[in-house]
Length: 387
Image (spheres, one colour):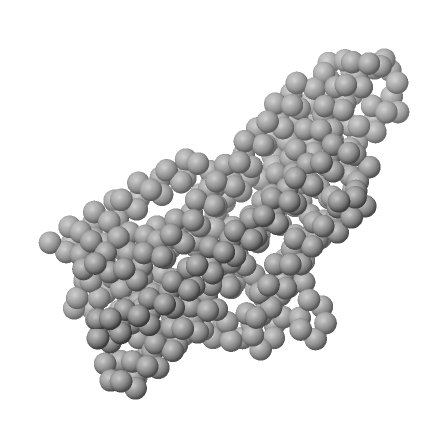
């Protein structure tokens, strides 16, 4: 991969995502007649609304049974998560475009620095690898959900729906009503697999670019230290150039993280909360009546929480390393005026917005551990209520 094509490769990681999800109308990087919102976008939104209605209908119909109520709440949980994902991607494509443009523009700015190019080449390769693995994960989940939805009723010879939601008005126990409910679930599963894939990969891709930007600050600080060790500190022109590059890199990254927060903040909060509830409910139903329909969704929910917190934690490690590198830059060799300027640079570094859900729940390893504890507590509450 040549340096000149590196920014194009960065753009391509987002473009391939856009092309993959054209089927559900979330192809935000199409600017021709296929650009969203289009008919597929509206179908996706309609199915999300319909899933909410199905879950709420079941909560009303089955309020006398804790287990059936739990299934209905599970449907609402999935609907809430799907709604957050659609809202995140489709609410305002200008934010999506801005994030992609900031990521690719950052890479293009440093094409002459081989060390920075090496960093982004590594992250772009990681994006391409993870896209394939995430696609395989959701292909497996989609096939499993559809196969289970069809095979379980056939094997048990009962009218079991994949999850607890039912369409209003229809008699879900009749052959006609059951068939319509089942077909509706098939459409929702197909669209849902694509929707979950796009949001997960978009977040991973954006976080990889953020980590690359932080490492770029590392590289420039190392360049400044190397220069100060080998040259007189009064050779101002090169020093000014490197300091200006550090400041510009910080500003670019700060802007990127502000847009990142606007894009993913609400999405991350809903994903964390709904995934915890979904896992606890699925485990409760599995323990109480061997409910296996939620097992695959446990994998998905766990993967989502783990991914959010893992990537956030990795970013924070990179950020802390960059701060240490900034402190250890031999800025005491600079002229006094430049030293005062460098102190401001260090302070500015501490003001970078860290990834968080609604600016309240930090996305890090500690949050992941807390999520596991809360899931266990919620499971215990459900089990106690059922006795």
